[in-house]
Length: 284
Picture 1: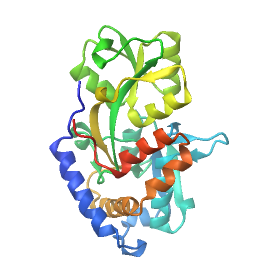
Picture 2: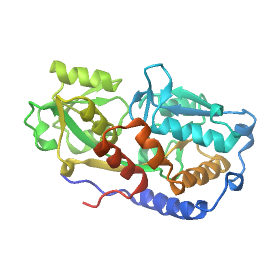
Picture 3: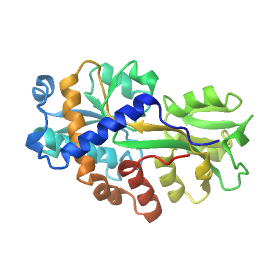
Picture 4: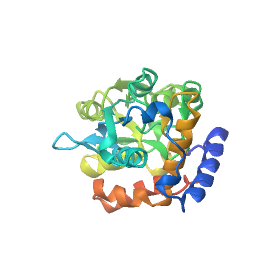
């Protein structure tokens, strides 16, 4: 199994992203497009972030929001309103993030949201700010070498995550155990209710770094590559224009090279994570 290539819509998004990065490299915050009135009138940036998905978004030991995407949200709030304190952060899960957006509880999703055609029918996306892929982790006592080795077995997966859809389409002989949180998935794995856990490689790197009884399948087994963007409701072009330009500035400023080391201590995991924000996906 090899890493797939992004669809045409994602490639077009990425080309737009490159153009925005070039334009943003010399820009100042004041040069960003104007905020739409509905955002300006709120006086804050209502953002849906993960709270159980380190290093992207999580709650630290003191119950405070932390993570790469959390820092993104704060930086965007500063661009919009002049202060990181204007980021009104709300916890979302993979399953609840789009309903929370459509229900107008939040105005933007910054929560490891892959850009897929099925989702593009429902919401709009900003230009990509990262790319991601999927893989599988298992106990070190496990014997799987490839994803296909889980045929007839069970993989834990988060509800609403792209991996569940991918498995349904590409590996129907693999059973899925759909759970709410990463903690639930790891518990199921250790209890023997699942033979592995499949999720975003960005998170899996951190999991195996912190859990020495687990291992990940080889990089050659990565699948379901996609670009990751912020999600917004459809027909909000002024809001999209602001976010596109702001996200372009983050990459031009090497924002991620500064933020990732603050949440990831392991040098290997740190460098792999920065790649997903500041380089193109690997060619397979």
